[in-house]
Length: 74
Image (cartoon, rainbow, N blue to C red):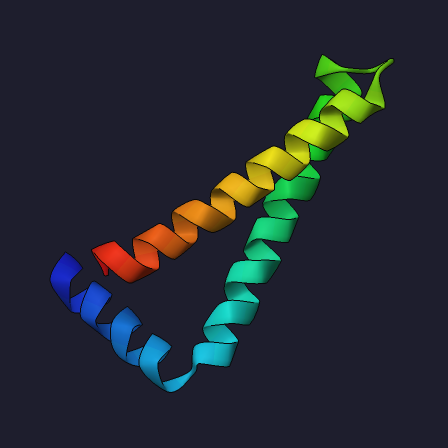
């Protein structure tokens, strides 16, 4: 069942590469904005630059993990 799902995702990704790239980009931006809000509100309320820096690091890490997953796992 999981292998069929991965196969469908692969075939969709092969035919619609731009759509997959847009979906991944929107997801990563949304996650990084949510992480930034959490940092701003709860973890670093008086030092926003720490939150901004950590958000950028986490977003880049998510992009790298996504690239690794797409190239090597799927």
